[in-house]
Image (cartoon, rainbow, N blue to C red; front, side, top):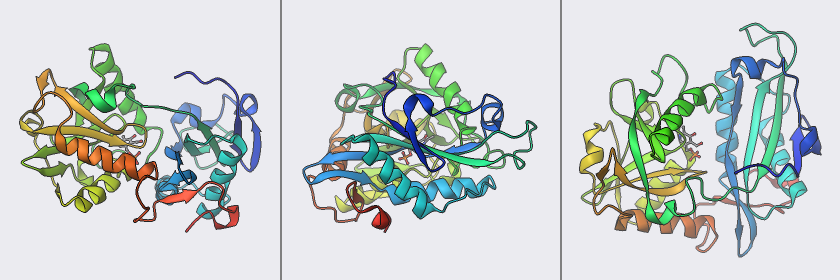
Length: 315
Ligand SMILES: Cc1ncc(COP(=O)(O)O)c(C=O)c1O
């Protein structure tokens, strides 16, 4: 998906035109990957546009910033209001939202601390992340030859740009080998996650997902799926999973804000279950789409109106 180059961007408190949302090439973030960011979505529902779990995304952003000792000038509530304003300024009924906090321009050395901490918010329209057919047909994936970072290297819980060097290697390897995605193992060889998605397996009507200790991002969709699956009466277990569980699972799917709920139909050319989207994936996917699209009542309080007065944007 290429940008069309229009729209408005929030940069350190000012809404600017897309073309003016620039930073200097000597900014620390460009050289040393010193940024943390989020990926949230706003959906067009019958009751108007709604942010999905924006508070959870913003909390994760500030948690990531804390890990990297980045103190941004305004607090999480104020930046959340800025997200609301940015979406309103762009007038998009449904969009993907990318707030980021980064180290700006001052001096270049590995030490990020002398550099200013800045922020920007981008929004754009973004459809199905793994292609329009993926949600129904499922995708073919491989287990990556790259592993996720060890717990004492990078904080996996922090959504930091630096982590995505590893994701990019996983993704490129998969795509160049003819797969849609890669599934990475953790340093112990247990299942971890995709380059930008969490992972669920189904066997005998029980859902399994790797724990946070398996170098996964604590996905907000992952948490949503756990809750919605439990609402459906399904058991969910979070524990270490060996690679071979993939091949004997009845169903496997990815989840994430971008990927939403995407079935996996084969891993390493071994068909999963019936070789297409299975019944539990279908039920969970339906529950997810019904929720985000406002088809069912917001029983968990996850939808926030975009036209909400800005001062009440956080709950
Ligand atoms: C590495 C990784 N894992 C998992 C996820 C899913 O997280 P969420 O559901 O919060 O979007 C993402 C999404 O950005 C990701 O980049």
